[in-house]
Length: 314
Picture 1 (cartoon, rainbow, N blue to C red):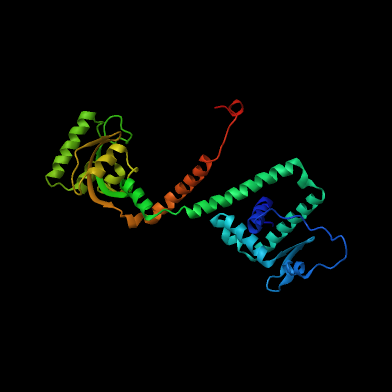
Picture 2: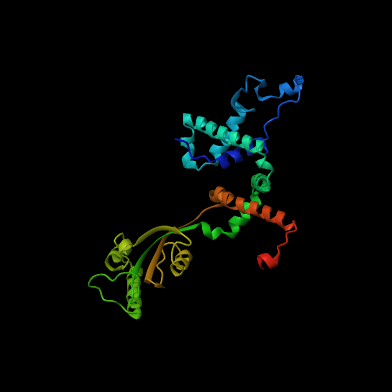
């Protein structure tokens, strides 16, 4: 069965390998005069170290050229498909598709299809896509953030690298999205707040947080585990809960914090902040593409671009 490589993918791989669209097949010489030695030395089969491994009509592809095409194709594949592409039959399948591509291209040129307006338009677009893509690769490679860039990003987003470990006791009120326990009274807002304050007073007086959570928390999941929520970063909890948790001192017992679920009594058991060295690689990966895009924007800004508003609209 043929693999799923597309002829368009082969076209791009060949173009990337040789830096231009595939050249037209050479025309027969006008006379039988022998070629000069320099021309003969330039043919792909000139050295045994790099033999011709595929011939299609008058075109010859050496082992090195084929390996480059194959590498480009594999590199463009999703990671999960690359292992399958290393199977022994993969190169043969690629060679068969490459032969088909070349045979069709040679016939197309014989019929002068490459000279039609449609072909010229598409070839020009593909050429633009290729060189623009190669330029973007260069911009991306050159857009390496400096130590100052990394530090500036870290300082601006330092709060994003905070982690809190906490537990809570939830007292629901009428209208809460949390299900009412079987046999439990549906408390009004005032009643729920009063109960939350009473539980906090017990905790401040030395009550066991885990036992009170198991007995009174309306969050069935964490309540059964002593109120433990585990660790979380910013953006994981509802805003009111997050704001309170990240502002608290370790082991402090919060005042009742109201959310759409009810009133929470929160205790933070750990608050950690990752250092610059801890997140350096993560920041580099994040801001690299942003810096590359700035390079693209700079190129666009110095290029005169005019849109016909009558056609495109404002």
